[in-house]
Image (cartoon, rainbow, N blue to C red; front, side):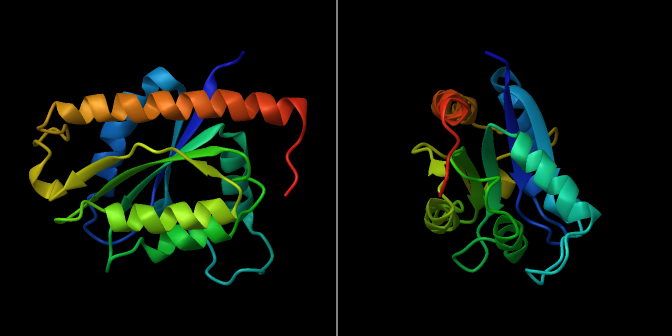
Length: 185
């Protein structure tokens, strides 16, 4: 079976965001998974009106999402939820998410982004995606990384490895199922 393709999505587009630091560390951890495509929503000017004709950016992102066997969403927690840019990117697509697994790496203050993840689980369930149980979470994230962008706590690497193992299992199982019989929602 061919190598798995993982899309790591940076969900924040806020000025001064910490997301790229977290995402770059995670993408390095995910190299064992297979091909890793880091999608930074701050670099893709997606329309905010759903239903408008697809432009080049919407079409290109659709191709990148469709090519992925699994996703990891890197999200902060804004006001006890996830960023609007992330919700917009999720809502612009449907079939691309279906019958594929989604993992989460969250960060924030005391909550570590976990409230954002819980809400994202509901959104992805509606899109017929499967979220994996284990997450990687950074509480007070700005104090948890060194100047090179690596987590100070070595347990973070183990947490990433565990989540990636679950994601890999689901990605292979669901890819086999989709190959045997196309998924219809």
